Length: 141
Image 1 (tube, rainbow, N blue to C red):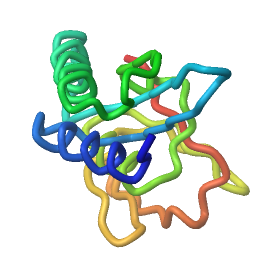
Image 2: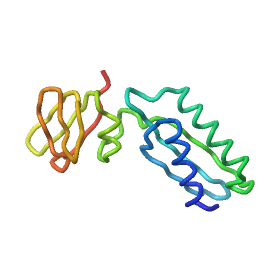
Image 3: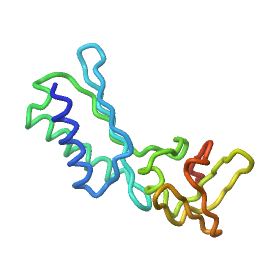
Image 4: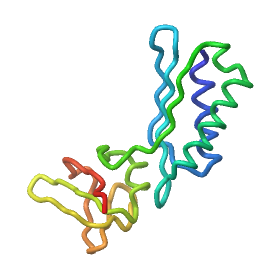
């Protein structure tokens, strides 16, 4: 399998659906490949958006013979609320969502309003540098 080629194609398909790629892993287990794609978007990603992307990815793999007839399992889903937040994509995708942020000396639970250049701005007006965060999670309302 040409993983660089497949990686590039998968990233283009995600972008074409106007989704944010949160994580992409491609592993080989025995004679089978496992492709996991985590996507999100402003608001929340829906099951139908994941299903549509899954069909497009499957079509691209099968018609393009990207895995040359090898067995594969495809998983397309959202990252879920329990996933730790730490990347720039995480901060961008959680704008307008409630977050639980742990700093060295305090905990902030507030709605994220804006992210720019490593700084989170919350509804309360509080600004926090992402470098100061020990742990961050989305809070389900």
